Image (tube, rainbow, N blue to C red; front, side, top):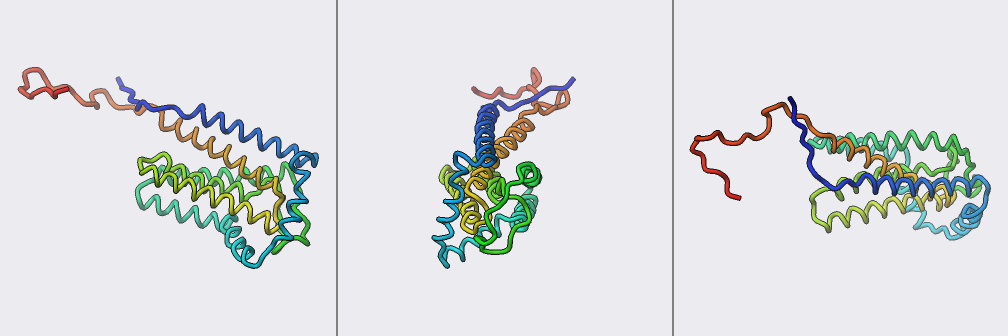
Length: 242
């Protein structure tokens, strides 16, 4: 016979599923908005025009490093570096979660861009070379959200001090927002592209969380007799006091 052991803990999966559903709903609303050019998407040209007019040399100098860090090459190198560090520290599960989350978000980015095939802002507004992919959703916003979100999740669900958890969450939010805004500032994306990237990133993070919690909650199997044994009668050992 085998015994099943499962550590009792609060099940966060229903909450994560609810948040994921809400985030997907926001993404769907944005998708419909951009498809028909109404609601929030109607303000996209005005937002981009205003952003272009407000450009400043110092802001541009900051926007470029941010947008490069949130790009395919930047996030790939960061993911490989963090996964290597996690493996060196013996955190194989963390490395697997990060790698899996990033592979999934990258694949979803390509698929969603092909499905919606939305054009980017005019090339004349760009600061840089035109991009070859479609606009919706912003891959920078999506993938940066997943990368920073997973790392923040490692801290939030750890036993570290609350102050460090707050710091990790704040740093993740700052990185996600700044990278997304840099895409609007450089005129590579419309506002709704970035908002869609953030919303689908939140949904995907919740899905990853549900998967991780489901795997962790699977009962571990121990062979019969593998657990702690009570002392034999007459062994002369004192009983533990309650």
